[in-house]
Image (cartoon, rainbow, N blue to C red):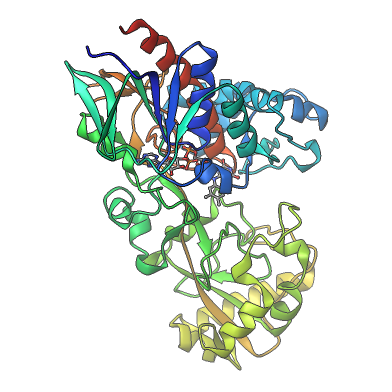
Length: 469
Ligand SMILES: Cc1cc2nc3c(=O)[nH]c(=O)nc-3n(C[C@H](O)[C@H](O)[C@H](O)COP(=O)(O)OP(=O)(O)OC[C@H]3O[C@@H](n4cnc5c(N)ncnc54)[C@H](O)[C@@H]3O)c2cc1C
């Protein structure tokens, strides 16, 4: 083998890549992070920074005792109906706490008062953070991790069946081991069509919340495929609901709408967590629904911060449901308007008698202060009573995470179609196809995966690389 430039080369400088780099450096390896963008951080730096973890010091500080990795594992596997890789989710559950404490040591703050149940679990495991990407970037810098920006890796170098380096911009760099940490593929129409058909089915409505990270294009999947890696997790991911009235980071629907399917029937609690809401909408005929509301809901509901900010973040968490945008969209015809529900039903193409019956039942419930069908909880009720009535199509098409990607074992070694490791090749973060399962378990699992598997990949790659001449 020709001499190596570094022990470990890490492709991608987001949460997974930086975690790998810090761990590789701590293990005594020399390493470099190659980043296609003009800055480090990737989607991790744009993210909400919520980390899903069990049995943490933050939970204990909030008075939550007794949560365990086993309970987290059981919850994830149950929600996925066991259609998730048990070995990978056992590791994520067992190492989530250690990953989070590692970040705390680095200076990341997880205020205990903001802990949330970010899935459909009963224990708060969603840990909102402050300063996560900056802490990783600064720690990597302080530890002497080298970085090269504007450096998009184009291919891997393989010799005698082992990955021994990368090619980027006409240059070859050689290493004892390579870590792929290139994130997801939500900004690539071609990759979405190929690996996430449920998202692609929404056509022009579909985009990823990763739109501010231009290189989230699935490069790592292609790099792996070119050297024989198996791609798993086809058509999995997280699809968030939206009114489609703008391109924003949006994960929630407001509870003041009445959501009906194309028959005109309600089918869910409109305030359901995003761990389940998109899947419910995509299970409806035509993968779509309509938000129906009256004048009172529009004026009062859309301007009430209790509904606009379900995670108490201090900002508006559902910008496409914001009052001024809704008014504008009514004026320009993007939102349907009618004097009666029957007329509205005609405009949106649902059965008038079913929509009227839905409203009658919902209104009677509102008068009683309950939702006897779906148990939606909210401080005030918004019946469908005061004209004009409005309707806007809703789709679950905003990609929050892509699930398809590389398959790895417990040491983050990339696997081929026969389940054999590809020597010298490691991966972690959203590029993995084995860390999603059938369902996104809850807010924070993306960061959990990036940190946990980034750390594992960095340590394992360093150990392996330092054995190579
Ligand atoms: C707006 C938003 C909010 C989110 N909120 C949350 C949240 O609160 N909690 C949560 O768990 N998840 C959240 N997510 C998802 C989460 O951020 C990601 O799953 C996670 O950060 C992915 O980390 P990563 O290191 O795998 O990839 P990234 O952080 O995306 O980093 C990948 C890096 O690789 C680089 N790259 C790509 N191709 C190449 C190449 N060929 N050569 C060199 N570099 C390359 C990219 O430019 C990028 O910098 C959110 C995502 C977004 C966009």
